[in-house]
Image 1 (cartoon, rainbow, N blue to C red):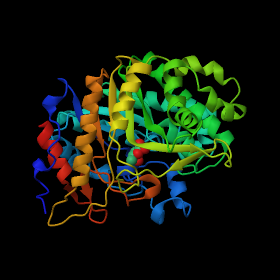
Image 2: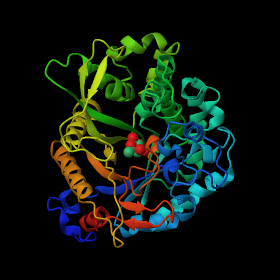
Image 3: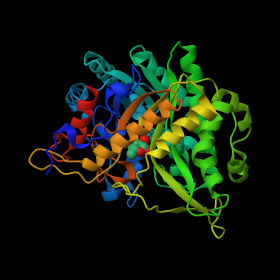
Length: 448
Ligand code: FCB
């Protein structure tokens, strides 16, 4: 059994010196997944009710307690500092800051104010995400992301948060993963609000992009800088020769819808062929706002997708396939080349020299504490391979300025409850004890 605190387990792990000067190493979390939504006067959000509805979440678990980060945050920030990290990517909870979606609860903003000061006191650059999925129930009641008004309310919320902590954050992202907010949640029904409705999907896919545009406009007017968005990408490949139009359409729905609109002000025609009849009226008038210039782009990457055309299925007639590569606890294939290819594609086809940041990359494994240690050689190899993929993308011209591991802590993995462990730090969800895994020690040795 290898010594789990030994950093020398993964020979090809790169070091800080292998990256350009100033490259940022960080770890990421999100509010609902770690804070404990029951604490501190947060209002109900749509994940609470989604989780309270049987069969949506493994074990019917919710984020009420999560990692109790709301009270244990000093210990969690110490872990980041002691691990030699430069930055921490966190999110503010809309339902905590505005329990009814509109009125500010000072207790909520006070919490984030203390948290940001805590980062700065430990030499950690705060990377803020304004929306990582905790939509206030009061806004969900009025149609959530299917309703244009939610995008407008989001801009107000973004302005309120930034007025309080914007002077101390390093970089701000408006939205985390609009594909998950819209398609995964309104077409596939896998995330809150759990809909399977093409009209709600088309509207959510537009309104989430509009929310970004409206927030950006408002934040720029208030003088804030270093503003961006976090998109998730997967490299879409044919499952077999003759996979037909599925690759192009799947890439359009999961990748191009979001990056094309943000950088070019267009949606891909093949996606509009299906969604067009369900789009909100006059959506074209919003495209200039949606494509306003960014200061940086966050890229989340986990795996690839293997697809084929399924003529017997309803639109979009895409069939997903299991691939042959080794898989994580999520069943996701480990495919580091996908990260390299996507970063290069972003630079080449979309953003040129605009700063790119890998805002999420990581893997779940069924980790267990043994003798006070957690051996996770699979994760160590995963991290090394994806950091090397990032280096290769940089050498091919992508201006990648940072890499954030997902996640600092084992946490509430949405519809999978607490079963899937992504953390560099193990969390015992009974005692709340934190135990750094071998991967944490390896990263620390590489970046310190
Ligand atoms: C991403 C989410 C993040 C986490 C990881 C595994 O889609 O942004 O909250 O769930 O996947």
